[in-house]
Length: 109
Image (cartoon, rainbow, N blue to C red; front, side, top):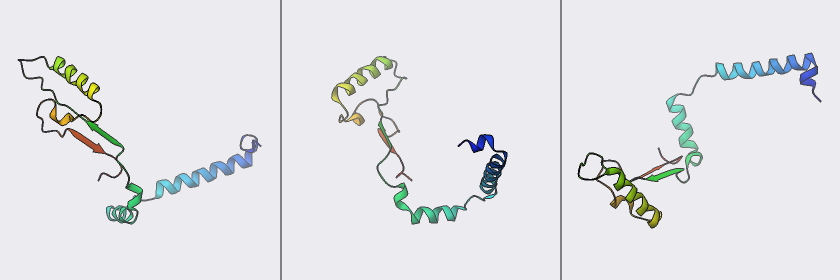
């Protein structure tokens, strides 16, 4: 109908309604930590499910002068591509304090 474009009264009323909504959002105080925790405890299914992100990594040290780290990384990458996703990537590369597999998502806390 286009009343919001052509009718001054309707436009004014729409603007007023949007200002009321904006004021309510601005005036609301954020929940306390205990309120958030209580809501999370009351709604555990809202944050369940499978991880949304997962990756595996192979660490290749660059400070070993006896080898070319880039060539080693490319060799390992080709090996991973040939072997597919089920390869034991944690047995490849150099020792690291970082985990070989990382998972993250809604269910992680």
